[in-house]
Length: 353
Ligand SMILES: Cc1cc2nc3c(=O)[nH]c(=O)nc-3n(C[C@H](O)[C@H](O)[C@H](O)COP(=O)(O)OP(=O)(O)OC[C@H]3O[C@@H](n4cnc5c(N)ncnc54)[C@H](O)[C@@H]3O)c2cc1C
Image (cartoon, rainbow, N blue to C red; front, side, top):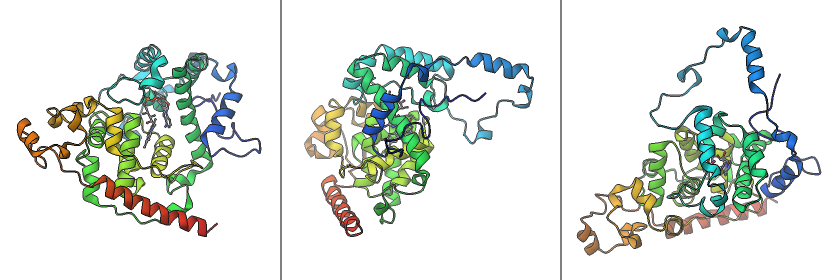
């Protein structure tokens, strides 16, 4: 017997009234919510089917493959694994779900569910999560349910547009040149760009195999818009490092950040890494956790250590360019270059209409 287990709605199960796949999230979400019934979140008696399979005595022919056989390297990162680990994380999040909307954007606070790795590997049931969240009318639970729907949105999007694995969804972006400076790319990968919030994010990724959602947006936008590096380089690096790597979510997230994706009314977003840092890590707690060399900085300089006066550097015994890098780009200059590039692509798109 086959059971659908990874999602609530798969493939063609949510279509527009015209019978077409959705390419914009909000109408997809509305249709998804309308289609949801108790039957979609029912409990499957997995043990029953597993026991039946075991009784066939074919299990010996299907020994558990090793990590290397399925293409993974051994790793030393620590996460609570298996169904038991997933249920622990879920229990913990149920106590915090009501605060999700208010807290999820602040990387120094435990605001998210941290269930992505379990959803990715199927150690928790999407039906269990949706059954719970859809019965809870708090803003926190409703916002969280939306994120679970984003996950399915990107999955169905990939199903209907498999070409996005190799190219930008928006045709006008496919042949655009990129600077692709390898030194800048290495600085980004290793958390040495000189922008503390970006570097802390990349170091979290490298050290833990996880990156907070707000930081994924900031780090991705910085690579594409500030460094003018092809989003596919970043997508590949995330795929290599993330324990929760999921092709549809990662590709969707990168194309969103690069403005090449399926968001129809998408403006050309440029994140200011300094303002994002001040807003979402106001006291620099997250920065200090991953960049100990900045721990001596006061709150008003932690987001921009290069702007602190020389006398202040001397006072705290800090040497810019030695203890921590000078920013590899000037955000305001990079921003203008990105806007110029976008204007050219926009003009080209309009000419070809
Ligand atoms: C550039 C970029 C790359 C990303 N790559 C991945 C990836 O490889 N794998 C992955 O699971 N998520 C990815 N995301 C989405 C999101 O960042 C993570 O799902 C989230 O940070 C995981 O933390 P959490 O479990 O605490 O999420 P919560 O905030 O608790 O959300 C609950 C669940 O909803 C799903 N979800 C949340 N946000 C999104 C989203 N924007 N798109 C799709 N699903 C979402 C995840 O399964 C997540 O576990 C990416 C986002 C960006 C911007």
